[in-house]
Amino acid sequence: MIVFRGTISSGLGKHSELIIPGKRELKNSPTDWPDRFASGSLNVRITEYPSLLRSSRKNLKALDRGLVPPTLVIPQNAIKNNSLQRKLFKPSRGTGQAWRATLHSHSRSMHVWVFRRIGSHMHDCLELISDKRIRENLDIRDQDEVRIVLHS
Image (cartoon, rainbow, N blue to C red; front, side, top):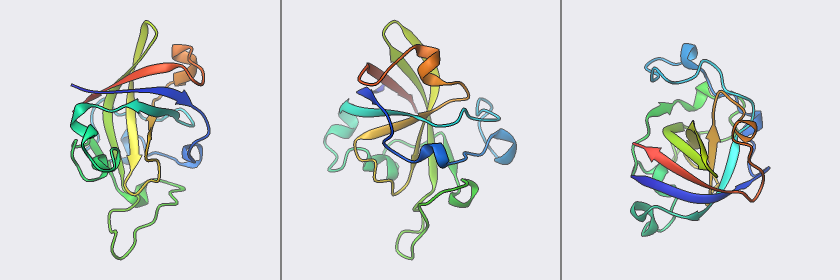
């Protein structure tokens, strides 16, 4: 089991400007991939990494390198308003990756997706997306402690 622990943070990235394609726009998307996502994302600043990533030099960058294979890979050009553009020596920069996950807070939990773009500068923060408003659904606020279980 791959478990991250962290605290809720706000305003760390520009995910609110990204438009992640839904099931109808993506070929080969998983059956549980939503048709549409709620706007924005939930940012979790990681305070404890899973043992698999603790020894990695740049913990979350290991996800970019495929240490934990994503459930879904989204082409860079399929993500609207994606400011991470490919470069000559970084051809996969801006490519989206998503992992099924469960977010646990207090005594409640919900299914979410961990979303990360290859080359992101979010070194200690995971972005969570869902078709539901996560904060409202779990009644969570900034600085609340949470646990994220990745389902690989």
